Each structure stands twice: as structure tokens, then as C-alpha cells.
Amino acid sequence: MAQEKPGFFKRLWGEIIGEEPKPAQSPAPPETVPEPHAAPVVPEPVPPTPEPTLPEPDAPAEEVPPPGPPETTPDYVEEIEEQATAARLAEGMPDAAPVIPAPATAEPKQGWFQRLTTGLKRSSDQLTGSITAVFTKRRLDDATLEELEDVLIQADLGLETATAITETLRRDRFDRDVSGEEVRGVLASEVEAVLAPVAEPLRIDPAQRPFVILMIGVNGSGKTTTIGKLAQKLSVEGKSVMLAAGDTFRAAAIEQLQVWGQRTNSPVVARPAGSDASGLAFDAVTQAKAEGRDILIIDTAGRLQNRDELMNELEKVIRVIKKVDPTAPHATLLTLDATTGQNAMKQVEIFGQRAGVTGLVMTKLDGTARGGILVAIARKFGLPVHFIGVGEGVNDLQPFRADEFARAIAGLE
Ligand SMILES: Nc1nc2c(ncn2[C@@H]2O[C@H](COP(=O)(O)OP(=O)(O)OP(=O)(O)O)[C@@H](O)[C@H]2O)c(=O)[nH]1
Image 1 (cartoon, rainbow, N blue to C red):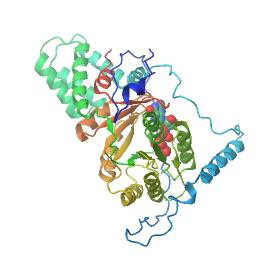
Image 2: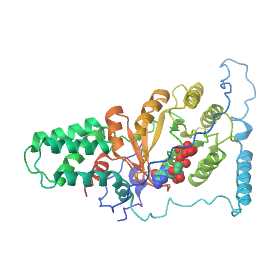
Image 3: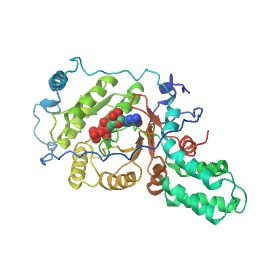
Image 4: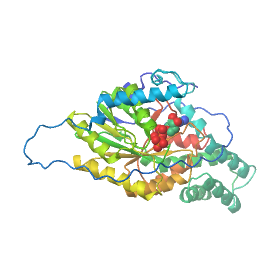
């Protein structure tokens, strides 16, 4: 069922982004359970470089060089594009500039809410199938409740939520006939109760110019794509957005952000692959400030939370940003790949400790998501969940809504 797309931004965006009226809900088709998510590849770190510094405030006035190194100039951008074209030619691909599809206006085959329910099928099928099996023609007794608790834990919901659900059932329905539908109703309301307090829109403080958003997460979790979608939302709202290609490990990541910059009409500050990420961040904040940009979104290289040297590098990026603006970054968003399951808990914990995560974006909920983990994360960390990603297109970033998520995970229509 197609959801209404046109007029979405008009309805949504003020100073607060992330609020969406509740759409109609729909059932989703069954889906098979895929293999677990492959472990991402971690790039080697570049050798440490000294942290950039700001000039002393009382230093003699000199001619101020343009912010950012020569690498951030349009010449460099052109050079990157030429290199990309050469690479494409070498691979026998057309020499045209990277295709910039126009997903912004293209109507998706399915509405976003349907993609959410389809994506959460992995979780909801597991839950509803097992719940039905447990509750077919059975009175609610201790053994049934114990089985139910196992089912809920296996669905990544976490021990506390599982216990809360079984305790509610014990209190209200013990020794009575209970249908799977009723149990799913209790499940949905418990999940919603946990998620509702964390469903918070991302607030852009207009007093902070630029409002600096740092995007962090493990490899392939959807940082760059989320930046592109976010840039689109904010640009449509009339904000002047600048992007920084802080994933300096990979030339392809820089190019990917350039493409998003073109799609969303946002200038991109970049340096050659292998450059120091903190230096790039320093230049980007300086440049965004000098140009009076409203928002700067900084990409970072994907890193596993257990790679200490990479987490040190992330801390350095943050320290260096603070040299230009001690209040920045104003939002540090962690992208979580919804297909990863339990490991997301560790990611939130360690990125939170090392980088001071202020909010979460759960991506790939249109895939074969293991969404139960978001419930466990919400209960344990209480961090705001701003958005969910339900596709690769520019409009596939949606405000997070607890009620929709809860019903989708419980397989309710
Ligand atoms: N289906 C789907 N795919 C997504 C979503 N978000 C991102 N992707 C895809 O996931 C892949 C990785 O996304 P990126 O944005 O490159 O991830 P990243 O975190 O920047 O990756 P690294 O630069 O390797 O750290 C790409 O193929 C994206 O198109 C989503 O919400 N749904």
C-alpha cells in the first residue's frame, strides 16, 4: 500500500524535525530469516598528526587565508570527480559523472510504513509464530509464561521487557484462556511504553551557527546515507547545510558524500583520502562558521567500537572540533544497523562512553531487521531515537514513532 509522500516536508519541518502524523498501517508479507550480518571490514588508521590550533586571539592582524586547505577548494572537488571518472573508465563503465538518481521525487513501490513492517517481519514473525505456538489452546500457567519469556528474549527485547510483559500477563490473565492476539496486544503496549519516552525529534538550535552534527557508527551502518537524507530534509526546510567528508580513509566514501552533496545542493568540504580526519573537521567547522552556514554535518569513518586506536581518533576529532567551537558538536548521532541485533547494545555503550552520543538513528529497518534490540537499548540507555531509515532513497529517513514501531514488531495491523 502506497503511503502519501507529497507534501511530507511541508507538513513536517519547522525548527523541530522528526515529527510525522501517524499513517495508516498495513500487514506485511512473510519473509524468510536471512544469514546473520557479515562482520564489517575495518580500515587501517592513518598515522597520528598534530592537532590543529586556532591562532591566539591577540595575535597581530594578518591577511586571513581562506578557510580550509587547498584540498577543500573546488579544484580539489573537480580533481576527485576526474579521478572517479578515470576509475569508472578503467572498469569499463560509462564516463558520465556518477549517476545521481532522483529518489527525492520518485514514488517508492511501497510506502515507508509498509517497508517498516516488512522489514520488521523478521522480528514480528519470530515473535508471533512462537507466541501462537505457545498459546494455542492453553491456559496461562507458569510453564506458558516461562516459554513466552524465552521467546521474547530470543527476539532481542531484553530480559527486563520480557519480564515486564510476562508479569503483566500473570497479573491480568493467570489461569485463563489467552489468545496469541491478546498476548501480542500486551507486547505492543509494553514495547510502546518503553519506546515512547525516547521517540524525540532532532532539535536544531538556531542560536548555534553552525549547528554541528557529528555522524558516527560502525562500518556500513548507514552514516553517509543518513547524512544525505538529513541534508535533504534540512535543505528543504530552508537551512543552509554544509557537509564534511570526514571519512578520510576511503576515496569512495568521499565521493559518495560528494554525490549526496550534489543531490541535496549542499557544499562538501573534502580532502584527499588518507588525510587527517581531525584536520578536516577543524577546517570544516572553521569554513562553515566563516560562511555563516546554519548546519554542518560531519561524516566519520566507520569504526568498530572495540578498535581502541580508531576510537582514540574519534575522540581527537571531537577535541579538535571543540577548538573552533567549544559547544560543538551539538548533536552526535550514532547510526545503528537494524539487522545487526545484539551487537548494537555494545555499540551504543562504547560509542556513548567515548564520543558522547546524543541521539540514535536506526537504519535498514526496511531490510530484515532485528528491531527488538531497539527496545532493549531504549530501556538500558534511554537515548533519544530521532529517525529510522527505511530505504536508500533521499526521502527514506522517517521520524521515529514508538506506536508504529511497537505495532509493527508485534505483528499487529
Ligand atoms: N535498505 C537500506 N539500506 C540502507 C539504509 N541506510 C543505508 N543503507 C545502505 O547501506 C549501505 C551502507 O551505507 P553507508 O551510508 O555507506 O554506510 P556508512 O556507515 O557510511 O559506511 P562506511 O563508510 O563503510 O562506514 C549502503 O549500501 C546504503 O545504501 C536504509 O535505511 N535501508
